[in-house]
Length: 468
Image (tube, rainbow, N blue to C red):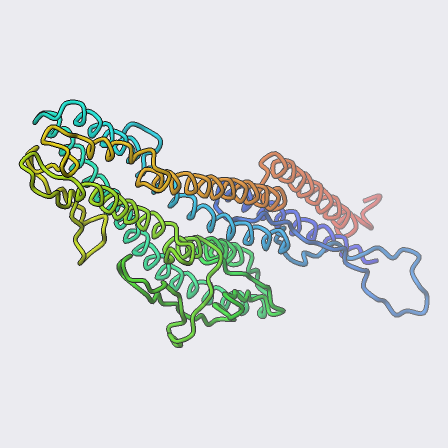
Protein backbone atom coordinates (compact mmCIF):
# COMPACT_ATOMS: atom_id res chain seq x y z
CA UNK A 1 0.00 0.00 0.00
CA UNK A 2 1.40 3.39 -0.95
CA UNK A 3 2.11 5.86 1.82
CA UNK A 4 0.17 8.44 -0.12
CA UNK A 5 -2.89 6.12 -0.04
CA UNK A 6 -3.20 6.90 3.65
CA UNK A 7 -4.02 10.48 2.69
CA UNK A 8 -6.88 9.27 0.52
CA UNK A 9 -8.23 7.05 3.30
CA UNK A 10 -8.16 9.92 5.79
CA UNK A 11 -9.68 12.34 3.26
CA UNK A 12 -12.57 9.95 2.56
CA UNK A 13 -13.18 9.72 6.30
CA UNK A 14 -13.28 13.51 6.52
CA UNK A 15 -15.74 13.73 3.62
CA UNK A 16 -18.02 11.05 5.07
CA UNK A 17 -18.05 12.63 8.52
CA UNK A 18 -18.73 16.05 7.02
CA UNK A 19 -21.64 14.61 4.98
CA UNK A 20 -22.98 12.92 8.13
CA UNK A 21 -22.95 16.22 10.02
CA UNK A 22 -24.76 17.89 7.09
CA UNK A 23 -27.51 15.25 7.04
CA UNK A 24 -27.87 15.43 10.82
CA UNK A 25 -28.11 19.20 10.59
CA UNK A 26 -30.87 18.84 7.99
CA UNK A 27 -32.81 16.58 10.36
CA UNK A 28 -32.42 18.96 13.29
CA UNK A 29 -33.44 21.95 11.16
CA UNK A 30 -36.64 20.16 10.09
CA UNK A 31 -37.57 18.65 13.45
CA UNK A 32 -40.84 20.64 13.48
CA UNK A 33 -41.49 20.60 9.72
CA UNK A 34 -44.85 19.00 8.89
CA UNK A 35 -44.43 15.80 6.90
CA UNK A 36 -40.64 15.71 7.11
CA UNK A 37 -39.10 12.23 7.28
CA UNK A 38 -35.74 11.85 8.96
CA UNK A 39 -32.74 10.89 6.83
CA UNK A 40 -29.59 8.89 7.40
CA UNK A 41 -26.26 8.84 5.58
CA UNK A 42 -25.54 5.59 3.78
CA UNK A 43 -21.86 4.70 3.43
CA UNK A 44 -19.76 1.67 2.58
CA UNK A 45 -16.13 0.71 2.88
CA UNK A 46 -13.98 0.96 -0.25
CA UNK A 47 -12.16 -2.19 -1.31
CA UNK A 48 -8.39 -1.95 -1.84
CA UNK A 49 -7.23 -1.11 -5.31
CA UNK A 50 -6.21 -4.15 -7.31
CA UNK A 51 -2.46 -4.50 -7.93
CA UNK A 52 -0.57 -6.59 -10.45
CA UNK A 53 3.05 -7.38 -9.49
CA UNK A 54 5.55 -10.21 -9.47
CA UNK A 55 5.41 -10.37 -5.71
CA UNK A 56 2.21 -9.78 -3.77
CA UNK A 57 2.16 -7.40 -0.83
CA UNK A 58 1.49 -8.79 2.61
CA UNK A 59 -0.53 -5.72 3.53
CA UNK A 60 -3.75 -5.11 1.64
CA UNK A 61 -5.75 -2.37 3.40
CA UNK A 62 -9.01 -0.95 2.01
CA UNK A 63 -9.36 2.39 0.27
CA UNK A 64 -11.36 4.22 2.91
CA UNK A 65 -15.09 4.97 2.93
CA UNK A 66 -17.56 6.07 0.25
CA UNK A 67 -20.89 7.83 0.71
CA UNK A 68 -23.50 5.90 -1.29
CA UNK A 69 -26.51 8.10 -0.65
CA UNK A 70 -28.92 9.62 1.86
CA UNK A 71 -31.67 7.23 2.93
CA UNK A 72 -35.18 8.45 3.73
CA UNK A 73 -36.33 6.49 6.78
CA UNK A 74 -39.97 6.24 5.84
CA UNK A 75 -42.11 3.13 5.48
CA UNK A 76 -44.55 2.87 2.58
CA UNK A 77 -46.68 0.33 4.46
CA UNK A 78 -47.10 2.73 7.37
CA UNK A 79 -47.77 5.62 4.97
CA UNK A 80 -50.50 3.61 3.21
CA UNK A 81 -52.03 2.69 6.57
CA UNK A 82 -52.17 6.38 7.50
CA UNK A 83 -53.91 7.25 4.22
CA UNK A 84 -56.52 4.53 4.76
CA UNK A 85 -57.11 5.63 8.36
CA UNK A 86 -57.46 9.28 7.34
CA UNK A 87 -59.99 8.31 4.67
CA UNK A 88 -62.21 6.58 7.24
CA UNK A 89 -61.71 9.36 9.78
CA UNK A 90 -62.64 12.05 7.26
CA UNK A 91 -65.81 10.17 6.28
CA UNK A 92 -67.17 9.53 9.77
CA UNK A 93 -66.06 12.86 11.19
CA UNK A 94 -68.05 14.70 8.53
CA UNK A 95 -71.13 12.54 9.11
CA UNK A 96 -70.90 12.91 12.86
CA UNK A 97 -70.38 16.68 12.69
CA UNK A 98 -73.37 17.17 10.37
CA UNK A 99 -75.63 14.88 12.42
CA UNK A 100 -74.59 16.53 15.69
CA UNK A 101 -75.24 20.01 14.26
CA UNK A 102 -78.73 18.95 13.17
CA UNK A 103 -79.32 17.35 16.56
CA UNK A 104 -78.39 20.63 18.25
CA UNK A 105 -81.12 22.35 16.22
CA UNK A 106 -83.67 19.85 17.54
CA UNK A 107 -82.77 20.84 21.14
CA UNK A 108 -84.28 17.61 22.42
CA UNK A 109 -85.01 16.77 25.16
CA UNK A 110 -85.00 20.28 26.62
CA UNK A 111 -87.65 22.87 27.44
CA UNK A 112 -86.81 24.59 24.14
CA UNK A 113 -87.42 21.49 22.04
CA UNK A 114 -90.42 20.88 19.82
CA UNK A 115 -91.69 18.10 22.09
CA UNK A 116 -91.91 20.51 25.05
CA UNK A 117 -93.78 23.08 22.95
CA UNK A 118 -96.19 20.41 21.75
CA UNK A 119 -96.87 19.50 25.37
CA UNK A 120 -97.51 23.16 26.19
CA UNK A 121 -99.88 23.35 23.22
CA UNK A 122 -101.90 20.35 24.43
CA UNK A 123 -101.89 21.69 27.99
CA UNK A 124 -103.27 24.98 26.70
CA UNK A 125 -106.27 23.14 25.25
CA UNK A 126 -106.85 21.46 28.63
CA UNK A 127 -106.80 24.84 30.38
CA UNK A 128 -109.17 26.26 27.75
CA UNK A 129 -111.56 23.35 28.30
CA UNK A 130 -111.65 24.17 32.01
CA UNK A 131 -111.88 27.94 31.58
CA UNK A 132 -113.23 28.90 28.14
CA UNK A 133 -112.22 32.54 28.41
CA UNK A 134 -110.39 34.92 26.00
CA UNK A 135 -107.14 34.78 28.03
CA UNK A 136 -107.00 30.97 27.88
CA UNK A 137 -107.89 31.09 24.17
CA UNK A 138 -105.07 33.54 23.54
CA UNK A 139 -102.62 31.18 25.26
CA UNK A 140 -103.70 28.37 22.90
CA UNK A 141 -103.35 30.58 19.82
CA UNK A 142 -99.96 31.93 20.96
CA UNK A 143 -98.68 28.41 21.65
CA UNK A 144 -99.91 27.33 18.23
CA UNK A 145 -98.12 30.26 16.54
CA UNK A 146 -94.91 29.50 18.45
CA UNK A 147 -95.22 25.86 17.44
CA UNK A 148 -95.65 26.71 13.76
CA UNK A 149 -92.72 29.15 13.89
CA UNK A 150 -90.48 26.60 15.59
CA UNK A 151 -91.27 23.96 12.99
CA UNK A 152 -90.53 26.41 10.17
CA UNK A 153 -87.34 27.64 11.89
CA UNK A 154 -86.08 24.09 12.45
CA UNK A 155 -86.75 23.20 8.83
CA UNK A 156 -84.98 26.35 7.58
CA UNK A 157 -81.97 25.61 9.80
CA UNK A 158 -81.63 22.15 8.28
CA UNK A 159 -82.01 23.58 4.78
CA UNK A 160 -79.31 26.14 5.54
CA UNK A 161 -77.01 23.44 6.84
CA UNK A 162 -77.61 21.41 3.67
CA UNK A 163 -76.76 24.41 1.46
CA UNK A 164 -73.59 25.17 3.45
CA UNK A 165 -72.42 21.56 3.20
CA UNK A 166 -73.24 21.52 -0.53
CA UNK A 167 -71.06 24.62 -1.04
CA UNK A 168 -68.32 22.99 1.03
CA UNK A 169 -68.27 20.00 -1.33
CA UNK A 170 -67.75 22.37 -4.27
CA UNK A 171 -64.80 23.99 -2.49
CA UNK A 172 -63.29 20.67 -1.49
CA UNK A 173 -63.48 19.25 -5.01
CA UNK A 174 -61.83 22.41 -6.35
CA UNK A 175 -59.05 21.94 -3.79
CA UNK A 176 -58.74 18.26 -4.76
CA UNK A 177 -58.16 19.23 -8.38
CA UNK A 178 -55.41 21.66 -7.38
CA UNK A 179 -53.79 19.17 -5.00
CA UNK A 180 -53.88 16.37 -7.57
CA UNK A 181 -52.12 18.62 -10.08
CA UNK A 182 -49.45 19.40 -7.48
CA UNK A 183 -48.89 15.68 -6.83
CA UNK A 184 -48.51 15.11 -10.57
CA UNK A 185 -45.92 17.90 -10.77
CA UNK A 186 -44.00 16.41 -7.83
CA UNK A 187 -44.15 12.99 -9.49
CA UNK A 188 -42.39 14.39 -12.52
CA UNK A 189 -39.75 16.13 -10.41
CA UNK A 190 -39.13 13.01 -8.32
CA UNK A 191 -38.79 10.78 -11.36
CA UNK A 192 -36.31 13.17 -12.97
CA UNK A 193 -34.29 13.46 -9.76
CA UNK A 194 -34.07 9.71 -9.25
CA UNK A 195 -33.14 9.04 -12.86
CA UNK A 196 -30.32 11.59 -12.63
CA UNK A 197 -29.02 10.15 -9.36
CA UNK A 198 -30.04 13.09 -7.19
CA UNK A 199 -31.83 12.88 -3.84
CA UNK A 200 -35.61 13.36 -3.96
CA UNK A 201 -36.29 12.89 -0.26
CA UNK A 202 -37.76 16.33 0.39
CA UNK A 203 -39.93 16.10 -2.74
CA UNK A 204 -41.23 12.72 -1.58
CA UNK A 205 -42.12 14.23 1.81
CA UNK A 206 -44.10 17.00 0.12
CA UNK A 207 -45.91 14.45 -2.06
CA UNK A 208 -46.81 12.31 0.95
CA UNK A 209 -48.39 15.27 2.72
CA UNK A 210 -50.51 16.06 -0.36
CA UNK A 211 -51.45 12.39 -0.79
CA UNK A 212 -52.66 12.30 2.80
CA UNK A 213 -54.77 15.38 2.15
CA UNK A 214 -56.39 13.68 -0.85
CA UNK A 215 -57.09 10.58 1.22
CA UNK A 216 -58.66 12.69 3.96
CA UNK A 217 -60.89 14.56 1.51
CA UNK A 218 -61.89 11.97 -1.12
CA UNK A 219 -60.45 8.69 0.18
CA UNK A 220 -57.82 8.36 -2.57
CA UNK A 221 -55.62 5.26 -2.38
CA UNK A 222 -51.95 5.37 -3.36
CA UNK A 223 -49.42 2.98 -4.86
CA UNK A 224 -45.71 3.54 -5.49
CA UNK A 225 -44.50 2.72 -8.98
CA UNK A 226 -41.09 1.39 -9.99
CA UNK A 227 -39.98 4.77 -11.34
CA UNK A 228 -40.63 6.46 -7.98
CA UNK A 229 -43.93 8.09 -8.93
CA UNK A 230 -47.11 7.55 -6.95
CA UNK A 231 -50.41 6.59 -8.56
CA UNK A 232 -53.48 7.82 -6.70
CA UNK A 233 -56.78 6.12 -7.49
CA UNK A 234 -60.39 7.00 -6.89
CA UNK A 235 -63.08 4.39 -7.43
CA UNK A 236 -60.46 2.22 -9.15
CA UNK A 237 -59.53 4.92 -11.67
CA UNK A 238 -56.36 6.99 -11.67
CA UNK A 239 -56.74 10.46 -10.20
CA UNK A 240 -52.98 10.95 -10.56
CA UNK A 241 -50.75 8.80 -12.78
CA UNK A 242 -47.17 9.79 -13.39
CA UNK A 243 -46.95 13.51 -14.09
CA UNK A 244 -50.59 13.88 -15.18
CA UNK A 245 -53.80 14.25 -13.19
CA UNK A 246 -57.54 14.25 -13.85
CA UNK A 247 -60.04 16.79 -12.59
CA UNK A 248 -63.34 16.17 -10.82
CA UNK A 249 -66.61 18.07 -11.00
CA UNK A 250 -69.68 18.14 -8.75
CA UNK A 251 -73.06 17.55 -10.36
CA UNK A 252 -76.53 17.55 -8.85
CA UNK A 253 -79.06 19.68 -7.02
CA UNK A 254 -78.41 23.04 -5.42
CA UNK A 255 -81.51 22.88 -3.21
CA UNK A 256 -82.48 20.23 -0.72
CA UNK A 257 -86.02 20.14 -2.10
CA UNK A 258 -84.61 18.71 -5.34
CA UNK A 259 -84.98 14.91 -5.01
CA UNK A 260 -81.95 14.19 -7.25
CA UNK A 261 -78.75 12.84 -5.74
CA UNK A 262 -75.50 14.77 -5.62
CA UNK A 263 -72.69 13.08 -7.56
CA UNK A 264 -69.02 13.45 -8.47
CA UNK A 265 -67.77 12.78 -11.98
CA UNK A 266 -64.69 13.29 -14.14
CA UNK A 267 -64.50 16.65 -15.88
CA UNK A 268 -63.60 15.00 -19.18
CA UNK A 269 -66.36 12.39 -18.76
CA UNK A 270 -69.24 14.06 -16.88
CA UNK A 271 -71.56 11.17 -17.71
CA UNK A 272 -69.44 8.72 -15.68
CA UNK A 273 -70.04 9.13 -11.93
CA UNK A 274 -67.23 8.48 -9.48
CA UNK A 275 -68.17 6.56 -6.34
CA UNK A 276 -66.59 8.60 -3.56
CA UNK A 277 -67.14 6.44 -0.49
CA UNK A 278 -64.34 7.73 1.73
CA UNK A 279 -62.97 10.98 3.03
CA UNK A 280 -64.87 14.06 4.08
CA UNK A 281 -66.46 14.42 0.63
CA UNK A 282 -67.78 10.86 0.84
CA UNK A 283 -69.23 11.65 4.27
CA UNK A 284 -70.78 14.85 2.97
CA UNK A 285 -72.38 13.04 0.02
CA UNK A 286 -73.96 10.52 2.39
CA UNK A 287 -75.32 13.36 4.52
CA UNK A 288 -76.64 15.28 1.50
CA UNK A 289 -78.35 12.24 -0.05
CA UNK A 290 -82.15 12.06 -0.27
CA UNK A 291 -83.93 10.69 2.79
CA UNK A 292 -84.82 7.50 0.87
CA UNK A 293 -81.08 6.81 0.52
CA UNK A 294 -80.20 7.54 4.12
CA UNK A 295 -79.49 11.27 3.83
CA UNK A 296 -79.23 12.64 7.36
CA UNK A 297 -80.36 16.21 6.72
CA UNK A 298 -83.17 15.25 4.36
CA UNK A 299 -84.48 12.86 7.03
CA UNK A 300 -84.63 15.69 9.58
CA UNK A 301 -86.38 17.96 7.09
CA UNK A 302 -88.89 15.21 6.28
CA UNK A 303 -89.54 14.79 10.01
CA UNK A 304 -90.43 18.48 10.32
CA UNK A 305 -92.75 18.18 7.32
CA UNK A 306 -94.29 15.03 8.77
CA UNK A 307 -94.98 16.59 12.18
CA UNK A 308 -96.45 19.71 10.54
CA UNK A 309 -98.76 17.59 8.39
CA UNK A 310 -99.69 15.33 11.29
CA UNK A 311 -100.38 18.33 13.54
CA UNK A 312 -102.60 20.04 10.96
CA UNK A 313 -104.45 16.83 10.08
CA UNK A 314 -105.09 15.73 13.68
CA UNK A 315 -106.10 19.16 15.06
CA UNK A 316 -108.17 20.13 12.02
CA UNK A 317 -110.01 16.82 12.02
CA UNK A 318 -111.25 17.35 15.56
CA UNK A 319 -111.74 21.11 15.29
CA UNK A 320 -113.95 20.73 12.21
CA UNK A 321 -116.27 18.40 14.12
CA UNK A 322 -117.15 21.09 16.67
CA UNK A 323 -118.92 24.40 16.61
CA UNK A 324 -118.25 27.88 17.92
CA UNK A 325 -120.12 29.62 20.73
CA UNK A 326 -122.39 31.20 18.09
CA UNK A 327 -123.26 27.80 16.62
CA UNK A 328 -121.10 28.14 13.49
CA UNK A 329 -119.42 25.00 12.22
CA UNK A 330 -115.77 24.64 13.12
CA UNK A 331 -113.25 25.15 10.38
CA UNK A 332 -109.54 24.44 10.04
CA UNK A 333 -107.39 25.40 13.00
CA UNK A 334 -104.17 25.10 10.95
CA UNK A 335 -103.69 25.83 7.27
CA UNK A 336 -100.89 24.31 5.21
CA UNK A 337 -99.55 25.96 2.07
CA UNK A 338 -99.69 23.30 -0.64
CA UNK A 339 -97.13 25.06 -2.85
CA UNK A 340 -94.15 24.38 -0.60
CA UNK A 341 -92.88 22.25 2.27
CA UNK A 342 -95.48 21.70 4.96
CA UNK A 343 -93.06 22.81 7.66
CA UNK A 344 -92.78 26.24 6.08
CA UNK A 345 -96.48 26.59 5.21
CA UNK A 346 -98.07 25.87 8.60
CA UNK A 347 -100.27 28.77 9.77
CA UNK A 348 -102.82 29.35 12.56
CA UNK A 349 -106.28 30.27 11.17
CA UNK A 350 -108.38 31.44 14.19
CA UNK A 351 -107.55 34.80 15.73
CA UNK A 352 -109.74 34.74 18.87
CA UNK A 353 -112.03 32.76 21.15
CA UNK A 354 -115.08 33.40 18.97
CA UNK A 355 -113.48 31.42 16.09
CA UNK A 356 -112.61 28.38 18.18
CA UNK A 357 -114.98 25.42 17.85
CA UNK A 358 -114.92 24.14 21.44
CA UNK A 359 -118.40 22.59 21.67
CA UNK A 360 -119.75 19.40 20.18
CA UNK A 361 -122.75 19.94 17.85
CA UNK A 362 -125.97 20.25 19.87
CA UNK A 363 -124.18 20.23 23.23
CA UNK A 364 -124.71 23.90 23.98
CA UNK A 365 -122.60 27.02 23.84
CA UNK A 366 -120.80 26.28 27.12
CA UNK A 367 -119.67 22.81 26.09
CA UNK A 368 -115.88 22.31 25.73
CA UNK A 369 -115.70 18.63 24.81
CA UNK A 370 -113.85 19.43 21.56
CA UNK A 371 -111.13 21.19 23.54
CA UNK A 372 -110.93 18.11 25.79
CA UNK A 373 -110.45 15.87 22.77
CA UNK A 374 -107.73 18.14 21.44
CA UNK A 375 -105.91 18.18 24.79
CA UNK A 376 -105.46 14.40 24.80
CA UNK A 377 -103.91 14.29 21.33
CA UNK A 378 -100.56 14.52 23.06
CA UNK A 379 -101.03 10.98 24.42
CA UNK A 380 -102.31 9.48 21.18
CA UNK A 381 -100.01 6.70 19.88
CA UNK A 382 -100.54 8.02 16.34
CA UNK A 383 -100.67 11.74 17.13
CA UNK A 384 -98.15 14.50 16.28
CA UNK A 385 -96.27 14.11 19.58
CA UNK A 386 -95.82 10.38 19.00
CA UNK A 387 -94.66 11.04 15.43
CA UNK A 388 -92.04 13.50 16.59
CA UNK A 389 -90.96 11.42 19.59
CA UNK A 390 -90.45 8.37 17.40
CA UNK A 391 -88.25 10.32 15.01
CA UNK A 392 -86.20 11.97 17.76
CA UNK A 393 -85.54 8.61 19.44
CA UNK A 394 -84.42 6.95 16.22
CA UNK A 395 -82.39 9.95 15.16
CA UNK A 396 -80.65 10.13 18.52
CA UNK A 397 -79.59 6.49 18.18
CA UNK A 398 -78.31 7.14 14.65
CA UNK A 399 -76.34 10.21 15.75
CA UNK A 400 -74.85 8.26 18.64
CA UNK A 401 -73.75 5.56 16.20
CA UNK A 402 -72.12 8.10 13.87
CA UNK A 403 -70.31 9.80 16.75
CA UNK A 404 -69.08 6.46 18.06
CA UNK A 405 -67.80 5.44 14.63
CA UNK A 406 -66.12 8.83 14.24
CA UNK A 407 -64.37 8.41 17.61
CA UNK A 408 -63.21 4.93 16.62
CA UNK A 409 -61.96 6.16 13.25
CA UNK A 410 -60.14 9.07 14.91
CA UNK A 411 -58.43 6.72 17.35
CA UNK A 412 -57.39 4.47 14.48
CA UNK A 413 -56.00 7.46 12.58
CA UNK A 414 -54.08 8.62 15.65
CA UNK A 415 -52.65 5.13 16.13
CA UNK A 416 -51.63 4.92 12.46
CA UNK A 417 -50.01 8.36 12.54
CA UNK A 418 -48.20 7.50 15.78
CA UNK A 419 -46.82 4.35 14.18
CA UNK A 420 -45.70 6.32 11.15
CA UNK A 421 -44.09 9.05 13.24
CA UNK A 422 -42.27 6.55 15.45
CA UNK A 423 -40.46 5.50 12.30
CA UNK A 424 -40.19 8.78 10.42
CA UNK A 425 -40.09 11.66 12.91
CA UNK A 426 -36.91 13.36 14.07
CA UNK A 427 -35.70 12.57 17.59
CA UNK A 428 -33.69 15.50 18.94
CA UNK A 429 -31.74 13.36 21.40
CA UNK A 430 -30.85 10.81 18.75
CA UNK A 431 -29.73 13.51 16.33
CA UNK A 432 -27.57 15.12 19.01
CA UNK A 433 -25.84 11.80 19.57
CA UNK A 434 -25.36 11.39 15.82
CA UNK A 435 -23.92 14.88 15.59
CA UNK A 436 -21.37 14.07 18.31
CA UNK A 437 -20.58 10.79 16.59
CA UNK A 438 -19.86 12.44 13.24
CA UNK A 439 -17.96 15.26 14.93
CA UNK A 440 -15.72 12.74 16.71
CA UNK A 441 -15.26 10.81 13.46
CA UNK A 442 -14.26 14.01 11.69
CA UNK A 443 -11.71 14.84 14.39
CA UNK A 444 -10.29 11.31 14.27
CA UNK A 445 -10.01 11.38 10.46
CA UNK A 446 -8.30 14.76 10.68
CA UNK A 447 -5.83 13.32 13.19
CA UNK A 448 -5.11 10.41 10.82
CA UNK A 449 -4.51 12.90 8.03
CA UNK A 450 -2.11 14.85 10.24
CA UNK A 451 -0.23 11.68 11.22
CA UNK A 452 0.19 10.59 7.61
CA UNK A 453 1.30 14.12 6.67
CA UNK A 454 3.91 14.08 9.42
CA UNK A 455 5.16 10.68 8.30
CA UNK A 456 5.49 11.89 4.72
CA UNK A 457 7.30 14.99 5.89
CA UNK A 458 9.78 12.83 7.75
CA UNK A 459 10.26 10.57 4.75
CA UNK A 460 10.62 13.31 2.19
CA UNK A 461 12.47 16.03 4.01
CA UNK A 462 14.56 14.26 6.62
CA UNK A 463 15.73 10.94 5.17
CA UNK A 464 19.49 11.13 4.42
CA UNK A 465 20.19 14.01 6.77
CA UNK A 466 21.54 11.87 9.63
CA UNK A 467 25.00 13.02 10.74
CA UNK A 468 25.01 16.32 8.92
